[in-house]
Length: 165
Image 1 (tube, rainbow, N blue to C red):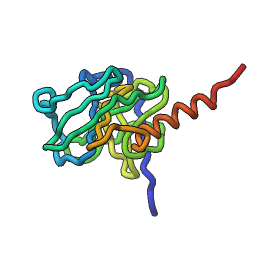
Image 2: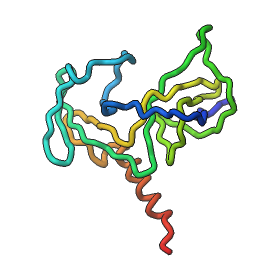
Image 3: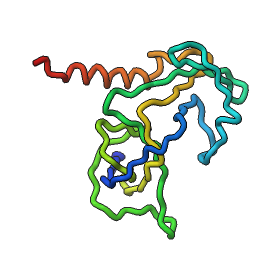
């Protein structure tokens, strides 16, 4: 049986607005998941007043732009939680939401824990934000990238759902 992944939110106050610095989405996979001294080693240069920037990463030119989520949407950075036996914890009544590669919720309640997958993996929200920096190799981020297109579809859907009265 194929179990589709689910996101489950624990509605606990003290949501994570801990995002002191900006979230960066790079066009590569890194084999490291810990903290990094980004400010010291990831030098950025503003290109224009729209928030576009350039940088390099491991010798590759990167073009970046700030992507703002529509009003009422937040992006969450999550970290898997394990109990002292190395097992995933699952000890409260969930509310289920479908998930894809990252988690964006409309009108988020105060949360600090997510459940994902058929095995009820537990993830704690480490940070949340309403905008992030999207980087592309050798070209400016544009509508060719699926992420800005998806964000634009959210805006279009919200505009179509508004009552004219």
